[in-house]
Image (cartoon, rainbow, N blue to C red; front, side, top):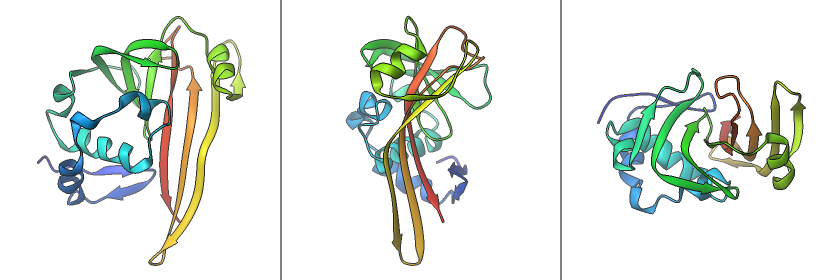
Amino acid sequence: MRAVAFTVVGLMVPTTVLPAAAQEFDPAALDLPALVECRADVPTYNGLAFWLTGEPEAAGELGWRKVDSGNPFLSQYELEKPLAVFGTETKALVFTSSGPMAVLEGVTATDLAKKLGIEPMISTEQKFLGEKVILEKTETSEGLTLATRVSLNVSTVESHPGKVLAGCSYKIEVK
């Protein structure tokens, strides 16, 4: 197991956690459309994220090939088989710091956001950014307060001209 650190919304996870998290993840059980469309939960996403981060051959096991995204904030993969999400298909997937997003062509951010019930925060010719909160809760256990937030996002970015990024953000913050 490669020794790496992984950050979940500003929380450094010790590298000793990675082997256990990676062992618990079952690639055969991956429901990628559910993760992208916010139909999964935070532990499911974290299992995938830890596994991808901790296993050097993880992407290859899924039939994914890492490609340059042209954006230091996005890790991009070319998928072996098309991914059907939001009523369209793609073979490109990016990961932000908090979740997976499909890279879509042939749709506009405004139309997709409207279809998904997402209100834009920014909507100009140069930039679109919209979010719909799916889940927001706070739990306290053993002296720690965990704030969980899952949101569906649609955006455009300069590194992917003419394309729309749509997917889910899974965040847990320790307060």
